[in-house]
Amino acid sequence: MVKAMGKIKDNGLIQDEPLIFEQGGEGRKGYSLPEWDVEELEAKQFIPLHLLREGLDGFPQLSEIDVVRHFTRLSQWNYGIDSGFYPLGSCTMKYNPKINEEAARMKGFASIHPYQPESLVQGILRLMYELEGYLAEITGMDHVTLQPAAGAHGELTGMMMIRAFFEGRGEKRRRALVPDTAHGTNCSTSAVASYQMTEIKSNERGVISPRKVAEQMDENVAAIMVTNPNTLGLFEEHLPEIAEIVHSKGGFVYCDGANLNALMGIAKLGDLGVDMVHLNLHKTFSTPHGGGGPGSGPLAVKKELSPFLPIPVIEKEEGGYRFNDNRPRSIGRMKAFYGNFGVILRAYAYLLSMGAEGLKRASEMAVLNANYLMMGLKGSYYLPYDRPCMHECVFTDRYQEKHHVSTLDIAKRLIDYGYHPPTIYFPLVVKGALMMEPTETESKEGIDRFIETMIVIAKEAEENPDLLRQAPRKVKVRRLDEVMAARKPKLKWTGDREDNNQ
Ligand SMILES: *Cc1c(COP(=O)(O)O)cnc(C)c1O
Image 1: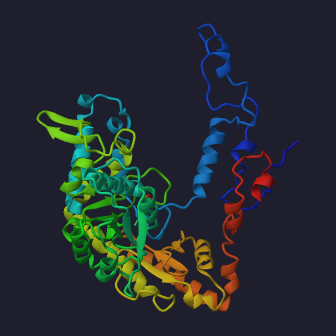
Image 2 (image 1 turned 90 degrees about the vertical axis):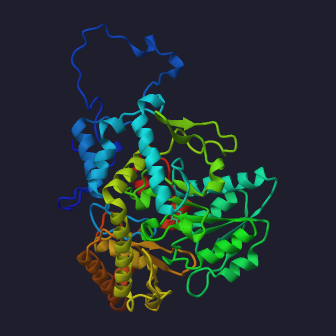
Image 3 (image 1 turned 30 degrees about the vertical axis):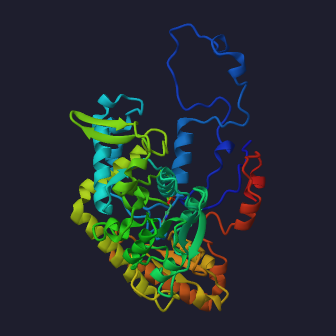
């Protein structure tokens, strides 16, 4: 008897795939071992009974080919930067040279263990020490820690260091200023680090004006957290003046440099009055952000704040490199061991292969591509801030609204055309935002094709809006009930496919 595992569909080469729990059979295995030439023992003879499991209910039993095919098929349903244009704003989903992946997989790197003694990992320490130096140079700062595991974690590290600074002087500053164009993580970081947040409204040009900061700045403010380029993809052009205002009352300027793709090799944030800045290696420096893998959010600081850096700090001395734990004013450890080394290593390989000139060129191309895209779509989509942008541009659905078509519909329709949608409904200061970041690695033809597709979609919105409202239709999973998924998530496999498909 053939047991049907689900509906059979004629999808051509993209076969439908049952869940792994629905596959396999009793006793099937992915390995075969030679016959024992020693006496066979039962597990309970040497493992305490209370640690032994009777069996695993519903655990799939599969052969090697079952497993390989299952995951290969699933991977083919996926969309990644290696499959096509991925304009997910603020995430910098650019193509990263495969040589950096090769480097990260080299045995000497991939097989090290964090408990190896310093004497056996001198090369690793040197690599991290040098990377810290390069990042300090790029940002115009004095010291860098590679510990933070992501951008938001870098922010938290920074704000904790600022708190330690003031507490060390017996000052209790309670407030943090955060512009409405800052990244959402800036607000949560200041809350998690126990600051009361005051929002600074951006002006009609989409940036913060010094006057607004001066109105709020007092001796109870520990820091301002500015995102630059901000979430509108615009350069905070008054930063030096704002820094002066903040410094005059003894506060610090924290810069969120997660989107350094627009600035590297061109502007050093340290020269603009910034006291500390985090970078996202998993955006700008050879690891994609939106891919869901590990990240790394190094924090760069000015000398005055160095004593508070998390321990250990890598130091170079005669005869080699070492970790220094003996730093009495440090905020302590922020992460097990010393950060996500695989991501750190890719960034190092990227910097060495790009060189200073290459980095600058990458930023120039990122900004050029974003402005080219912006000019191509202007007229078809509403552009709330009509001025040159940095590495990304923000449009809205205002023109499409009258046809009852929303940003979500536009994003879903792009999937039918084979594109990963841009970031939507972010930044929050723009209603119905569509935030697009082409990155420096797209060719002119690639961007042209995307512009054409977006224009076709704008026409469809006028002439046949249902096409958008029912999108996506050419994919395995149609439009999901996102509200239901958020309100009543089913997080457990019940064994019933229909039940889990609802
Ligand atoms: C991506 C991003 C962050 C957060 O980075 P994570 O690594 O996701 O924590 C913070 N600020 C800005 C401006 C970003 O673009």
